[in-house]
Length: 385
Image (spheres, helix red, strand yellow):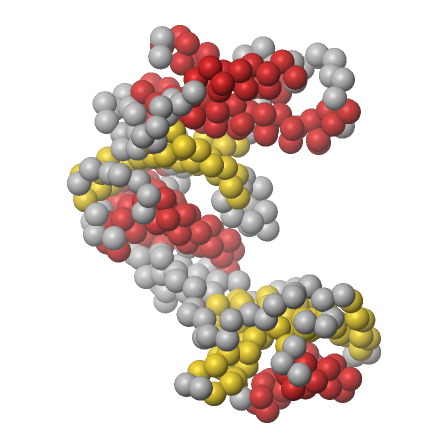
């Protein structure tokens, strides 16, 4: 331990200190998951900023060098088994076993540059005080996040962060009509309405489409309690829902071809924004069942499943591009919180697409993997679009 603190002092004196991370809590049930230390400058004074990462929120405290050493020593002795010091010269890790014995290892440096010295603001929680969080069982009556709902709370805030970014580059009418297809219990639907209406002050009408009547009844009751007058839920199959104008089409975790039905509705409505988080990719995978595959990647079941998930979503993205959408696929939220973590977004573009080139890409992809048809293609062809 003494050697580790000497290394910290040396890195600070030589200006090679980048950051320090505490990980692996001594108790698996601990609310405090990590602590991150970095050097900051506040009012021309250098200090050490501690970011305490709890399951439900982050807390930031700043200490002088001497205070920081005391706090760090306490945390290593009582709360964490691993401390990793990142410097420009090398990474130094201290590991403390259950008997209190410490060992140090040295590795090549992860960072070649120092972090900026300005003071970070705490991460914004876009759904921090909203009433729906209590009614949906995410927070208790005292406003504290219920531990088992911590991952859902993180997912909600990440979702709103993504939505906020997408809105900046999307042209929308003054009155925005949003349809959320496959809204389930409505966690993200409520979050979206509350954020856009009460935080962003936008004029929105949000409709949640959900087949299960008991969830629709429940969500409509919660909307009434929250006085969300322009938020409603309807019990209907996605493929049967008919709405002439949809400005933003959302389909988060609509199962298998329900995602395609939702995208199709967005294409027909010429939605400005189509946002999907696909799951349960069965259609393409089952369509090639029993077909011999030469590709060695498809030899193993788990790789085969993942590969056809990527093929399914790639074709969806290409079909969106063919219909004059700019597309992107990215991680919605870390696998740590949910496996259903891929988000596919289509934003209406002004430039006409090269449909022949896109068709060629789709056909080539299908040929390479023995895919006869994609459900979304079939829906579009049937409608003559």
